Amino acid sequence: MDARHPQDASAAMAPHLQLMADTADADTPQDAAAAGLLLLWLGDDVLLRLNQHLSPLGISENKLHVLLLFRLFEDGRLGAEPPTPSSIADYFGITRASATGLLDWLEKRRLIARHPHPADRRSLQLSLTQEARALLEQALPDFWRACAGLTSHLDAQERQQLLRLLAKVWGQVKS
Image (cartoon, rainbow, N blue to C red; front, side, top):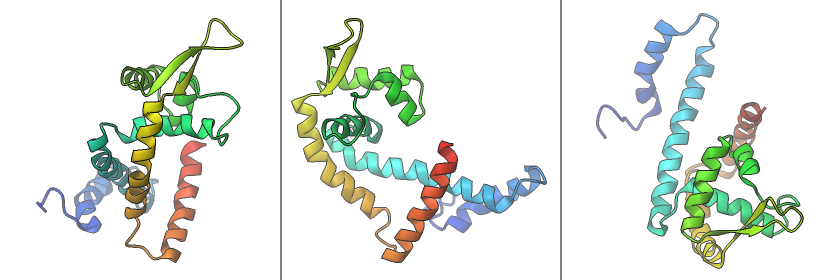
């Protein structure tokens, strides 16, 4: 590992913490900022690792996650109406234009289909295609294995503690 990307978190953060000491407001808790910085880095690294697992299937984590929303809806586990560009944008915290771009990408690859809305002729509903269902059947076992692999070095108690802490952070970020 080169000096720009040390594997030890403390070593990687040291120059950033020095910069923070020089540039952060006096009322910024440095331990909170350090933890937030590490979460940002972890988010990037986690997505990179998951996308590496998914790349042989020609799909990325964000596109897989959109397909998961449709699968959850089909299974009766997520709402009474199928996902829409607006609900997808809200769910992921992205713009509606970005959600539409994701859906267009999925439609071009025949992973979702647009159908006339049964009650509103001006609207379309979206659904998974058979190709998407087959892709999910193939991708999900490896996806869940990759997710588990992220914490495989922790024991069960540490994973439970991490779950509680991450849920607390997630709740704050989502509020």
